[in-house]
Length: 206
Image 1: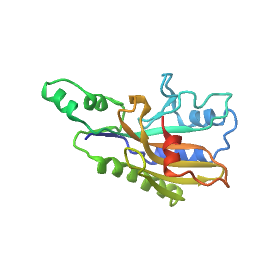
Image 2: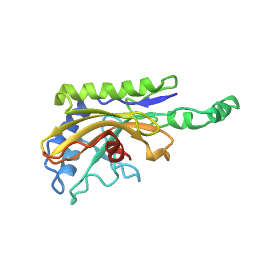
Image 3: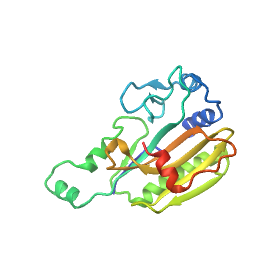
Image 4: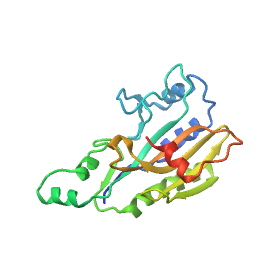
């Protein structure tokens, strides 16, 4: 049950905190990305590559003339192999486990753990929450969604008119094959309650 992860450290967390305190007017996020030294990725799946090995979604984030509505940065992927994966491995063929191992191959900081289980996936989410708590204080809300096929966790901080969420959801980039943990940043009205766990799963999905 492998995990591929690059848990955010002080540099990325500092950049996220700066983004969260911005007023997201047209061009503001693009200027921030330039200050951070993020490099335009130009791929169909992400807008920037950070200095810490992470990729920034969606692909249109940070446009010079647009006011963005969200920014997402995945830092962990998880997969539960099935019997077919075991058959492929027994026959010496590659499958989804090898696909996951190749995620961000060569990018700094990413570590593939073939023996990790769901507790390892949750542990990396918790490590990110703890790291953000050191910078932003304790999260305003911590919720767990157990209504879907997989139990997912979320922690959220309010930063003026924006919010930061560290949560788990399905990875659309793998055609729903993998699960992921990511950071979500975006405008969130000061008087607006945080969504439920089920609603957060839909908001974070990318």
